Length: 225
Image (cartoon, rainbow, N blue to C red; front, side, top):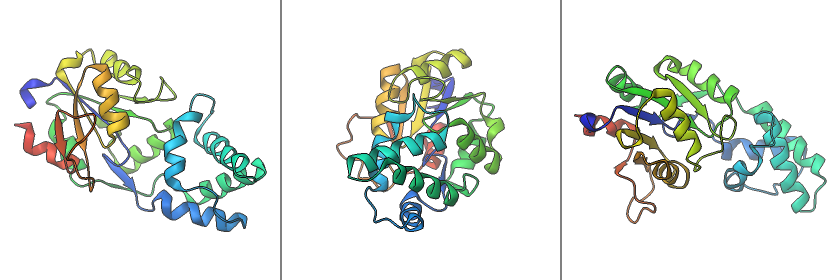
């Protein structure tokens, strides 16, 4: 693989790092703080996250808009949703993150061999806190915050922005990420090679089909030579 690429683009969340406390753990605490029964799930939040990126000033604003929309749709005052968002933010610590298996070693392996960038749908201040905490910010020649700097993944624009910054061609670039819907689909639209980190998901029948399938980002080391 190494000889076929001049650059590697990485997704961040659940590809390179993950929260020590998941959103599924924090959201019930937020509802409890506000004193209201849960009226949406963390999966619903993740599914609709991208609807609010363009209009939002930052991550806190996005979450307030999103949660207020859920509240209005489900018979609550939008102010209740905004209160849940504030409670969620009080519980969420963007520095309380850990490496995904093999991530640190993989970054060290590709560093110096090829150009490296991150393409993430996460908000700038949120992602900067993670990269700084893990001590890996210097690995990336650029970080494209899709949905903020460009349209969100799976739009090809964030990938094109990274390619332009690195001055590399799509066909000699590999994007590594954990989402078929945003990372693989978006990478393919941009014309780059794709590696899907499937984790515990059964990779059989993946749609769209990536060029490479990895159980963890650390498996990239096996294919690199």
